[in-house]
Length: 295
Image 1 (tube, rainbow, N blue to C red):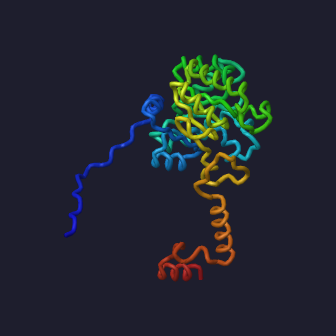
Image 2: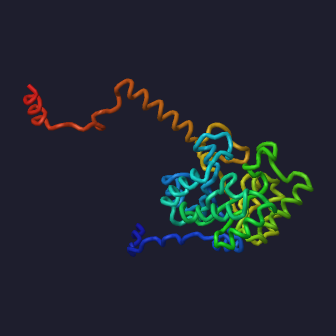
Image 3: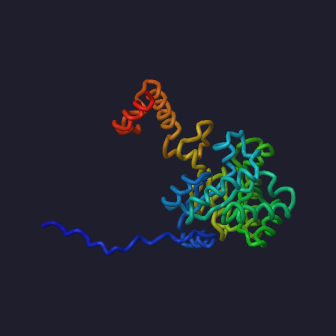
């Protein structure tokens, strides 16, 4: 005997609620992991939002994976805002975080607040992220007092690569690890709603996560954090110059794109494209009429 098909009630699936900084804290309290990815354009943000990612970071990593710079240092406020606006048009549910670029918050607290405000006013972001520990506490306090949510970022901070001696893991000695623990606590006290931990030992990241009431988002920091973030171009295999050890590639789009481009070139050169199905035609009578008109 066959099972009768379920009867549709006509009800649409419930729409996801907007993710907020409060959602982040609640997820940590419930032990639910937070998902975050980077995006720099409308279609990527739209796909991520539909997939259900919790948060989208418009990272200054766009300097390397989109604009072709050697590092993140050349990225400007105007470049960041341009990409933020594109992402904000595509994603309506995820928490949107704009990465404050190099020298947009280091010069003065006043400049930091002004630039942070631009991410919300002009870029459509919900929050901002900036790099650094105790040296950024005053700027974070002032930015958050202006009503702008701030996510911190410690460990490997790409804007400080010249000071750090390159893209190197941080917190591997007892003294360095202690400083990172102190920095994390200071950032929480200053008002951060969350902290990115990049390229630090897994056991250190887990220890920091347990000592904070705000969530940690790991990248190359093990699975003891309250959430994870990856650069989407690394995850998709779109960026062919360098892939960090901590990245898991879920696809190899770079190779697939090369194959598609090569196939297109061959089809054009051999006249296989455009084929009749890709072509607009005139009615025969209209064509004959044209030829008669032209003599």
